[in-house]
Length: 113
Length: 110
Image (cartoon, rainbow over all chains, first blue to last red; front, side, top):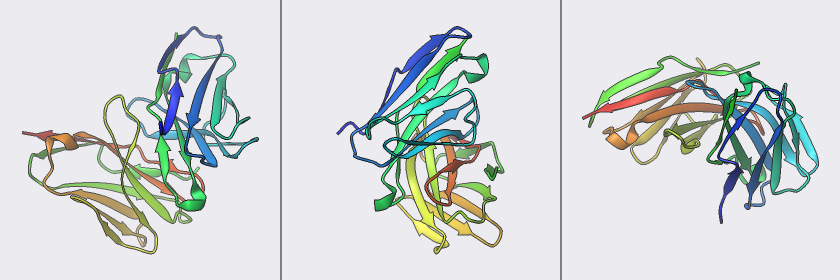
């Protein structure tokens, strides 16, 4: 049982490049979330999903897109990366029906030059 | 949007002393609160939670207090140890989302 995993762990992009971050969970959780964390700040919600095929905007959704084609995977896409998107990205999952417990991945450190 | 905030950005504490971390929340619809610990380079780690129908909950060396009247919660760490050095976040949830505060760094002095 790996819990929540994220790929890649580190990435450096040039302004304007695109990339996709992958989050996977093996706990059969319905809910999945993408957060970003800037230095010295708390995590801010980008997008989330309450089930396969559904997504919703969080607090800071601009510049990001997401997809939840499979229950176990939640993808975060940057179509045209900007330096302001330099951050650490965390994925989380939760089975809210059985209690509100969020499990977090180890994070992806993204630098946009 | 509604957010959770903290009063102290950094807390220095002597090893063996008790630590108290405070947090103010603003969403009156929140009915569930969590304290997380985050070490450098790692994701948030669950410490303790509390539901709005409680005002105190104790764990191993940690206690969370909730004051709904003034929308305030606190985390007390007893006999602080070097391994407690980290950033601590409070988070609130009114339903299926979790909103984080800005964090407090705890530095344990030997």
